[in-house]
Image 1 (tube, rainbow over the protein chains, first blue to last red):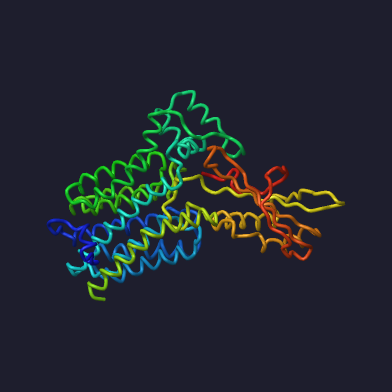
Image 2 (cartoon, rainbow over the protein chains, first blue to last red; image 1 turned 180 degrees about the horizontal axis):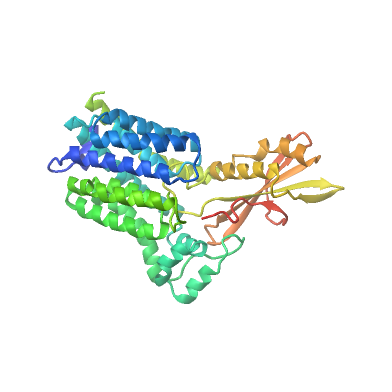
Length: 288
Length: 164
């Protein structure tokens, strides 16, 4: 019989990793992430913005110093849940994912080894499920088979046209760029280019298959590295940096603890730069 | 809570996480909710919903398109409706808009035409669907139906010119 324990253990390691270090670094990066996002929303003047700007960095400090770690995580999760309540139904999907991740971390006692193990397995399973569904949804909507969604995005925004321009013959590319997405009857947005179609179909194929390789112990690390490379390439088009960093942090959970621990300082610097830039110059990406 | 209980709660939460996107897909198909919202992981699957609203009345036996001033309160109310309609889908009707609009526009008969743009699955082209909601002079709903998309005129289109 498949018990909860056996189910979760699919995401376990052969040898118990340093879960304390791994999960602490995960929580720190997650709190740096949500704190930075609270600050990059330059125009936000509502109470949820100020709660985020003030409370989340304090929670971050508590987790970094490991003083009042659990109450800090509970408060941070509460701030995000409040923010979702305030913005619903327009809350971004990554806000839910951040809140769920924080709720998960806050629900376990990080001082106890057995609880950390369950938390790590839960977070790994959650990440695999999210990745799997991003691929499954693309199949259910059927908009990647003939490249029509990416074709639409090429017509709509230069971000995608810059990225995919090399995969499409010049005349087809010009046709797509000339389509006005505001006009009725315009199209078709489907693309007749083999390299482009291979790329479009490989997106959901990767998203569907990667979770299995992430959960299979023998391929876990390489799958995590491949998923990070995939995530970076997606961000070249989508440029939704905040979602990218959030998922990067989740993918770190499949790698040895030293990886995310060492990533804390460089990521903190990147986030600081992004916050500083958001107050100074218009940027070519979205804080989404 | 004991670890054993937490394990069960975690598995239940993961099961919900697995099932919800499938339910979400059904809700998108049946109610037209925004695929990009509600945690369904369907971002970058289809274009974001695009709703515009046109207002009409009957004057001297002829159908007339009502034009709103750029800075009018009515336009602000309609733009807020558009945002909600894009998120909640077809079940979100403009019924709450009608009474204040009928009063503000001083008309005896109001038709709120909701236009939805989407990428057609069969032709891969942009198509438009229109839903007409009729209200009497008290703002009470009379009819609501899907109509053939053919009528030009002034519309409130919050998405046009919206920053990326």
